[in-house]
Image (cartoon, rainbow, N blue to C red; front, side, top):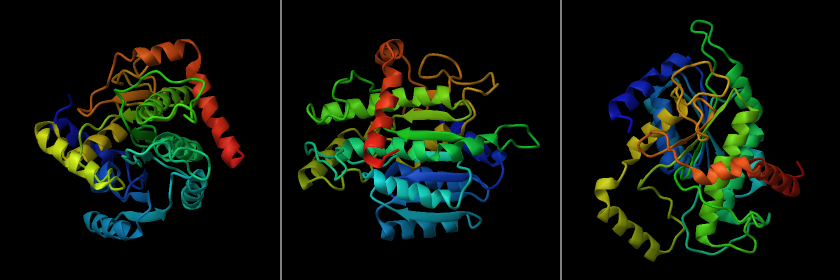
Length: 335
C-alpha cells in the first residue's frame, strides 16, 4: 500500500511539470472523475481543464468551486452523452480546436444498473459502451494530443512531458472473454458485461503502450467509493447500495482520498511510459518493469498475478481485441 503521506507528497510535486498542464476528465461532473479533477486543479500550476458530462447545472457548480480553488486555472465544460460514439467525436473535436496537447486523460464515466442489454441507437449496449467502447474512442481520438504532450520536454529538468491515460474500472477483475461475441449481442449479462469491459481495457492498454511508447496507460480499481453511480437505478438498488456502504464502512475509500489517489496514479513518474529511462518504474501489467501499461489497486500499489492476461497475450488475443475495437469504430463512425 502507498501511504497517504507519499500520495500527498507526490501530488504536491505536480508543480514540477510546470504550468499549463491540460487535463480532460470524462465523467468529470460526478464521483471519482470529479474528485480527481478537483485534486488536479488543487496541485497543478495554471492548469487547463475540460470536464465532459451531461449535467450543465452540476458542471456550473463544480466550475465555480474549481475557480475558487485555483484562480489561475481555466475550467471548461463540454456537454455530451458519451455512451454514443458520435457525441464522443463531437466532444473530442471541441477539445482539439483549443488544445494541441493533453497531459492527462481520465476516463471514469459509467453507470450501475440491473437492466439487461440496453442498446443505443448505434447498436452498442449502453453500459458496455460507457465502460469500454466510448472510453477507447476518447483515447483513440486524442492520441495525437497525448503524443504532443510527451514531446514537450522541460528545458530545465530534461524531463519528458506528462502524457498519461487513466481508466477507472477494476484492475483486479480480469476474466475470460467470449471471443466470438465481444460486444455481447448474444451472450449479454451484467457479469459478462463487466468481464468484457475490464479485460478488454487491460488488453487494449497493453497494446497501445507498445504502439505509443511515449504515453503511459493506467487501469485502476478504485475500491468501495460512495458516488452517484447508481443515479439511474431504481429505489431498491439505491437502498441496497446504501446498506452495503453502511455495512462495509471500515473498507470504504472516502471520495476525496480516491481523487488524490487517482491523481497519484495519473501523474506519479513511477507509472512511466515504455520509452522512459527511469530506473524506478513500477511493474507493468505484463510483469515487466516500466512497460508503459499498469494495473493499480485502491491502495495505489500495482496489481499482479494476471493469469488471464498472460494467456491472451501469448496467443495473440491482445492484438485482436484492439483490432475488434477499431472495427467497431469503423462500423459505427466510418473510421
